[in-house]
Amino acid sequence: MSGMQAPAGDSPGGPSGQPNAPAARRTAQKEAIRAELSTLDEFVSARDLHRRLEDAEVSVGVATVYRQLNRLAEQGEVDVISNPEGERLYRACASSDHHHHLVCRYCGKAVEIEPPAEQWLKDISERHGFSSISHTIEVFGVCGDCSAHQDRAAGS
Image (tube, rainbow, N blue to C red):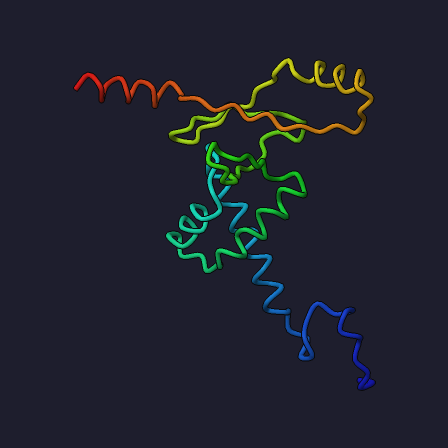
């Protein structure tokens, strides 16, 4: 052995050559977050996701959940919407194409929709001299299951 060590940035491990524990933990935590999101059909808040992870005995801090969700959103792996109260909600992205959601305000069930707004937005932007436009359309309502439950509860 030459006694020379690789610069810190060239090795995945610490001085002993062992994997860097914090980096390994971050990766495991990110994978746990991805895995939990993949089990959900509805949007979920970061705090609710954190509670679900704790219930599954996954050790991850709430700040890490927020950080990883934001990274996954930037990478296009997670859809992000804001509920009527302004809280950000997350869901594993089912489609890599631009899309919108119809979301139940009670249970969080979400359906991807294709509103006719795309061409209208393009036309109106061009008419007013705007370019590089972006938009978010979030439609909230009550799904059939929740509506039926409310009807049954009202009839009791």
